[in-house]
Image 1 (cartoon, rainbow, N blue to C red):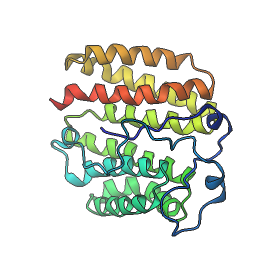
Image 2: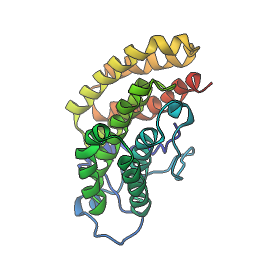
Image 3: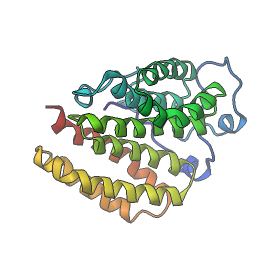
Length: 244
């Protein structure tokens, strides 16, 4: 999965209480808390891509288009909210609504609460709430794909979700959430590691082993923050054996 990697600054990691979203269009009133924190998570990186992604082809194999698109739109929304691109975020929100409307009643019900939160946050340009909800959409999307036995394992997608959770909670200095996320990453990696190895991903698995070991001894937001981008980058490598 392609993504925007926008690294955290140490000062912002320790001081931020919300994620800044001051760029993009000015058609809606800015939330003062979001405007005040100028951007622990909006510095562009060399591999940044701002275009909305289409559903990952490997993940979508055997999965209904609407189901596959839900997770993709959630990740796109995360990137655009993180960058403060509210006009693009609203366009993606519309696409997400269309995909959600095409889901079965049961699948749509699993998304209802997070979509309600996301609608309110995007409409009010509340970056702190919107970025958490957008990431949660990807988590729910991964769960929805499992019934269709996708080529891309849902646990790989969950590792992507948890890597972004590290970004979010490191920026807010929430060590309790960071510790819980680290535990979730370890459990998810333990579950998917044998499958990664069986698909020829030994090199990527070894690197992920090292990152998970470093994560286990992290204790401060700054330490977790330093691991977020490497973990997200490694998830890209973990995906490759399943894309063949």
